[in-house]
Image 1 (cartoon, helix red, strand yellow):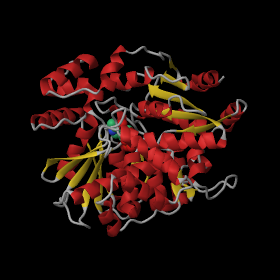
Image 2 (spheres, helix red, strand yellow):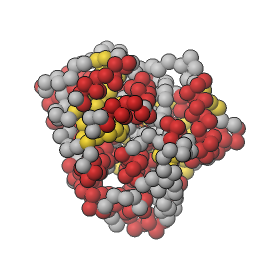
Image 3 (cartoon, rainbow, N blue to C red):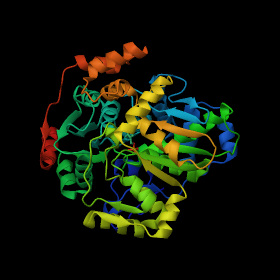
Image 4 (cartoon, rainbow, N blue to C red):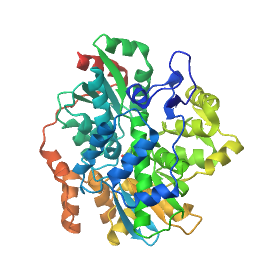
Length: 490
Ligand SMILES: *Cc1c(COP(=O)(O)O)cnc(C)c1O
């Protein structure tokens, strides 16, 4: 069963099933749904998992959650991993130092880790819509990678329409092309004047707006969302952290029960929340190390206990998917640590005063599970170059984690770093890092140059983007979003 982070308003059910939480992700008082209890995994579970495939382990974990989705549907959803680079295993764990392993989560169709959750989640959600014989509008706000992954998973799905909002100028060229060239008669892509926070806050207010929902209902359409406010994504983001540990066991890099550091490049905190839940479920994580770019609001929260948006500006960095100040999933951790009443208080204070602060006891509680650090673009570029010289190519988001690896570890145990995107989505930054210049390279040429000089292949899905027709060119002010969506629905 699922309950709400800000408590119950008396108008909704106090406990809801998984299917309800994913189809109606907006909870009382603008809160989010969270599992009432997390299932436990013990060492025996982990040991048995060493004999199983990713899909088998994923199914075991989903079954522990006891969600109201039929096993056959879950199996079909997980079978979408068969189309990833390696049919046997959607992720790849690569050792790059004695005690440092990269969990490559980007081997799916849109070359970022968002596919790990959105591929199976998309199947479950559209299956549910079909079962209910109900049309759904899925809203998604993207900082670059959620958009392409959402469009891919829902393209031409029955009973589903998708509106994707991206910050104009706030994504890489490849990310933008992945969206504006995506075919599907049920899709609509809109650029907005503003940044990701603007896009996501518009999405959240539409999700919570009764009048907007009524307008949609008059066209017989219901509303849901594909951002990680939807728990349907988080559940799949727990699994790969567990599987990373199982892979370390299999490869004899640790013994059953030994602890490890989990390093996560973070923006909306969905990936990090998945690690937190995995830890609570019993995965032997020593600590979750949170990496940020100079939009370091999460670093401030975890090191100082302060979430302060006052006088804060969002900076465009070389890791655009982490250019976020209003990080949605922090709320689920606050709820988990301090309860619904305190969580609601903090979220309301943030809305009213752009600020909240943890007490010193609350901060200590948070620091039991998390440490955090941020880095600047210069560090990212130097790191990319350094690892290329050592024969490993990592994207700018992944590179932010190296600062955490260097500075935050307190014990000599293995670290697993989540690699969230393939470098091909950020070729201009990659080329500037290799050449140590500050030129504005063009994506197509940068891809080609790097591919030639480092002898690496560019996936066809990326190469072909430059030949495709642009299907959506509209960029609008955020106050016109609702109108634009209603036009599309008609
Ligand atoms: C979405 C994204 C992130 C941030 O992940 P969260 O779960 O939102 O914290 C980091 N890197 C890349 C490449 C992403 O696409």
